[in-house]
Image 1 (cartoon, rainbow, N blue to C red):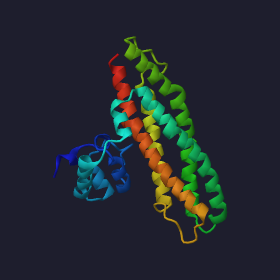
Image 2: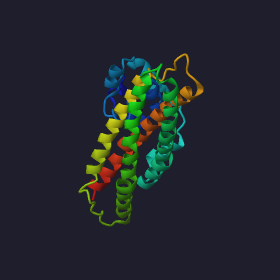
Image 3: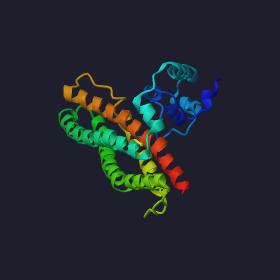
Image 4: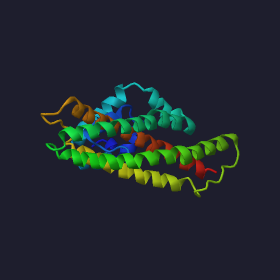
Length: 241
């Protein structure tokens, strides 16, 4: 079997343009579970590794390099943070508020006939209550420190001493919270039957499930950028002094 099967999902997501879309469709966790090999990921997802390898090889040979691909290779940490906040944090906050209201509307109309909505709602509320303070901690504490650290490093100054001892401490906490959020996303997907609409679904029901699935996709990319790009680079920079 090709050597690619022994590469980590994280490395493939970073190296192969468009790989995250393939992983998303295959149900492979490339954000929180990015440290597993492709072989292990395929086994866990119950999919044909050879078929997936074929798709990845085709992408590597034919897919154009996108602006995001270039940014991941060339952007400063400050630029990466600006991208995460402006694209993902803003989207997440807006969608959580919108979907919260939409979920309440759908539950009031369909909850009696569709008890699965209670499970979807429970997991969604936990996700909302976790994500809002999580993003606030990143924007007010962790991200400003990483930016200050990079500026000091670029200027040849000593890296400022953080109030949390080492940047690894809040990063470890953020990654743990990402794991929790990833599990809640899986709970929502499972409770909704993979976002499968019932026969009596109204337009609001459809909008809810479409919105939840788009939130899932965006959060996977969001967490991938932090876990697999920003955080490792920040820890490496701190270790260089």
